[in-house]
Image (cartoon, rainbow over all chains, first blue to last red; front, side, top):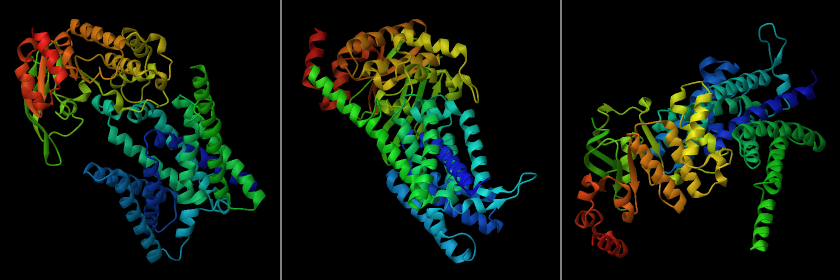
Length: 293
Length: 249
């Protein structure tokens, strides 16, 4: 397959994987926690590398899931003991990320692991990083990791759909009927962790937040059904990857930067023009109501 | 057998007790009002009974057994303001959530669950709104959806947190009819209630609460001016007092 095709496929996979999980983050008002996790998983990757002495994707996913869930647990512990949630996130996030930065600079100086790369990602190199898996031809590592994570996430969402739904809408009632609210929360945080790690190489820790939040936020403004919201966010994820790639090659600019920008532009358009919840249709409705009365 | 038996319940936030040494039982098949001023711990009491917040001390029994959410004998109607009504879902879906405890892991709601959800919407007079996005409902209609969800839970004991707050007259009527229907089926309903003027009309039994229990018992015995003064301290408004006096005459 051509170089271009691989970038489009991997970008779209990252867009879909992030977009779908992002819907639940938005509905649960956890966008900032996702931002935190997208950074602290760096510590997980470094620890996985130090322990396993390899850049094997499986170890990276496990390391990231562990540290990502730990981030959520620490934030939960601090905020349930009376510290404001945003302050808890701020402290835990920077502390764990900083440890990751120290470990990288001390131990892993001479390997393919550096802070710039982790923060910004570089999807342009991704098609060259190939892995041979069983009888399959060599495939890009990012493609394999993203596919594995997407399948895992979809499986979990299908299996626990009603639990995700009720704990997002009404956690108190969910707890009262015996649904393990905290378990579902940590499960989601684990999914966010592996999602960010799989998207790391392509878009990096900062721009992955755009991929996580923007498609879901756009979808939220267009529908009143959760299933449609999930589908739409996947579509927006793909659209931003494809449009972002062509924008980048036209401008000769950063691909991941362009993908994130397209996400922002899509959101801005939806925010203005959504037929039911858009700024313009709202203004129009107000006007109509005013002239009627 | 008492539907609800609370012994020595204490709940604290940080070091301050919000509920202190609560003891009460309630009779089966009655409508019970939980009455008290703001900050008296009424919602906290319900949440502590349901295990939604930790108890500092005490013991709660539902039908002589330690309460476990899995037993599915308790239905809960939280305050309407506690959820985000912009959530992308419709009325029927919210009511269907009342069945989730019955459905079990990995399964989807069955035809029977759907029927029960439709039935429950019908009982609160909301069947035409089944497909309506929940943010498009009025406050009263949202409250009725919450009640329908509790009905769908098919419980023996219900806890309702301020169901009458901010609803229109039609909804208030619908809620009262529903409470009476539940009562006629032998269910026990505990309702956190604010409006002192309607207590005598709505409830058979009252719990007067202000951090600790002031008194509890049949409404005509315990809902007296003296007990209310004790419960509300100086907070009972002039209007309430006037109303009560008129009623007592």
